[in-house]
Image (cartoon, rainbow, N blue to C red; front, side, top):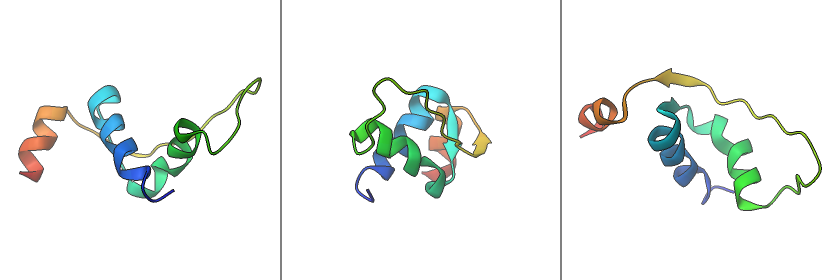
Length: 62
C-alpha cells in the first residue's frame, strides 16, 4: 500500500486541489488500486488536510 499512497497524494492535489495528510490517503489508495473490492457498495473515505491551489503548493515546496 505504501507504493500507492504518494501517487494518491498527487491525485488529491492535482484533481481535488487538496493537500492531504499522508496517512489520510491510504483508504483512497486502497480503493483506487483495487485492493478493496467496492463493486456494488457505497464507499466513503476521509481525506484531511488543508486546501491550497496546486500552483501555490508547488511554489511552497519548490
